[in-house]
Image (tube, rainbow, N blue to C red):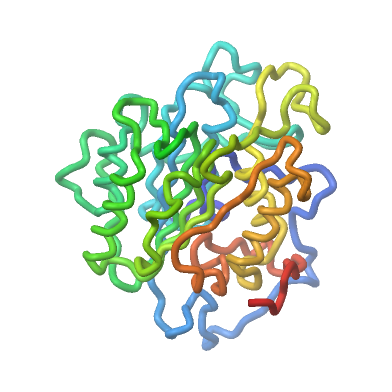
Length: 332
């Protein structure tokens, strides 16, 4: 069984396209493929690896609502590892008990989300053990880890608060830059993945990688902000569009909502990692004026940007006939 829709879990989610936006294909738009045709999920080497996703909602408390949504996709549930404190869906301040949305007209994103590590189990130590595939080192939870092989790809999405050289976690200790880089080096040395893409949502998130992220780990990173600035929420009270009137909190983070909504509205077998980076960079900068916006940064192995997004985020067949993202199409 596969988890319905795509992968990127979401700590902000992606079931957010609503209303008059395209949600399904008409009958005459269906794609027909002969059984003998190769699955397009094969990579450029003609070999099909496993996609893994690690989704981390690092905050706790209803005031951090926007950090805690997780999005699902077309990956197998056994290959998705979710960290979430899990204290907002049924929080007394939530005007819709048991429901989490990340768009003013969005559907519920909470139902059916796998919860591998929750509450006191959302720790940096457990995250490191999961990434390194060390089942004997995780404490509590489902025990699920990234048991990846040399041809597999890994997508990690993290959302929480941050500061210079540190990312928040709901339980101490925090995630520190040098510790995290060392974990990435160990994972690379183990030879247990082909490539990895990290999306990091936090204030000053660029400081985790600035000047210390190696380029030879087959890891590509984008961050919501540079090393010295805040990242911003979106769909907040007083903004346009605003959340439903009963909400007193932002529904999402700008960077996170930007990549999720981009993924929902394009065919990820045609869109590259670079094209999504450019789209997210433009929207997160508030279309280059940086008024309530931040500088999306990139680090690591830039050659990964030429690859198609479905290799990391999966593919929703409903987007087969969606228009391609042509931003910087054909440019290096």
